[in-house]
Image (tube, rainbow, N blue to C red; front, top):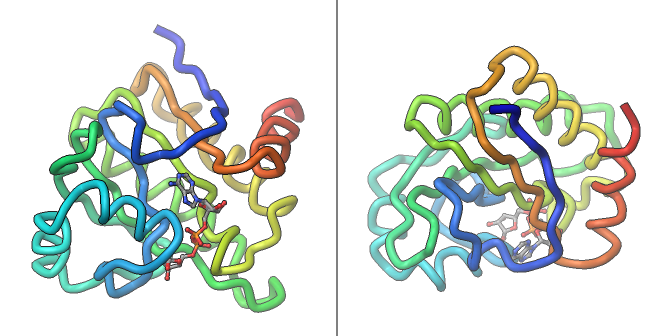
Length: 171
Ligand code: AR6
């Protein structure tokens, strides 16, 4: 089956995917934004499991169960904080997407939903982040044909969805 990449306007905590991605911070101990929303919906057992992971490096990813979320797993990845673009931010952002897909693959996940990593509190410019996200996912799928059924970009607002739709339109 050929895998597909789609955008969706909505709340990632409602998505019934094999895995949803959390735009976390290196402590993996929760925060605001999508991280806060995921922890609220998953319940305190998620934080308890996160405490056993001893953090995660920027650009890497760690996996937990989804607990009360509709998703089976959560892939936690700390994105880069934007410091102007000269500190390896773009490479780290691409690495977040690849690390998550690598983990998803090793846990037999067929559907994975991503939020727009780093474009909130971490201030990564959306018009730069979207093509990096799409490019990293496309690159991974090209080297792992038929590994996934669907990859979703779950966008929390219209502006974000527009940026990802534009990035998907440009090959
Ligand atoms: N579903 C989908 N996307 C969402 C949701 C949701 N429920 N809530 C927010 N977004 P951010 P970052 C969007 O700030 O920039 C946390 O405190 C949001 O509109 O959540 O990677 C962590 O602990 C934006 O488009 O993540 C870290 O400290 C996107 O998700 C820090 O924030 C990312 O915004 C990470 O910052």
